[in-house]
Image (cartoon, rainbow over all chains, first blue to last red; front, top):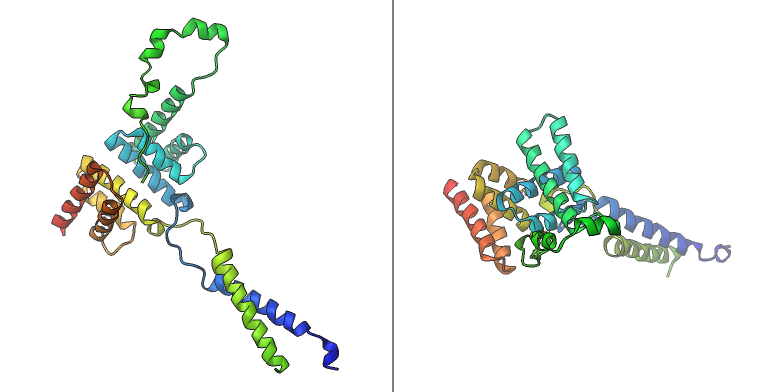
Length: 154
Length: 110
């Protein structure tokens, strides 16, 4: 009669063991949280990180560095995220000066983006507005401009 | 080998495979982490940001408060770790200067 039961008990044991192993490794003793990335930070810590980036930008005026740091947080639109945080800060009765610092970096990013990606103009409008003198005056497109120099990634 | 012995052997095999899957192949991915779990290079950059702000504001209480969020033994320990990493990673001289400036201020305060 035992022979008729076949080897199903082996499969049962294997599945049971697998389940126990997965529960232990995922729930009871998951790998410890070390060496994480800023994009995984909790929302309130991301706010602290953004504010610190903005304050550091205020101190060093290094936009490429601030941009590189903001990219670590993983916001789709870093400038909008900063602006939204500034508004949230004010709405919650936070320090006005901090909101201004956040808004300043947001504005700097937006003007930098606008300079790098000018709006598409029709041929006629472009011909009427663009002149060689204007292109030469535009410091943002100048490769020697320190503001557009590459960032040293840490 | 009895059925029970075989059963436990297979159970242990399954357990081993389950642990391998849960710890190595598909470990828990974390969301909502805290600043103290950041990798050392991000922690060092965080410390550098604090040093950049401190260099301008000279507000040591604020700097200590920010460094405390990294939950090391002390802010001084945090900056020492950052200096060590920055030196290994060959940070630029101005960045090293900022970190040392904050380090000295914290040391004097201790």
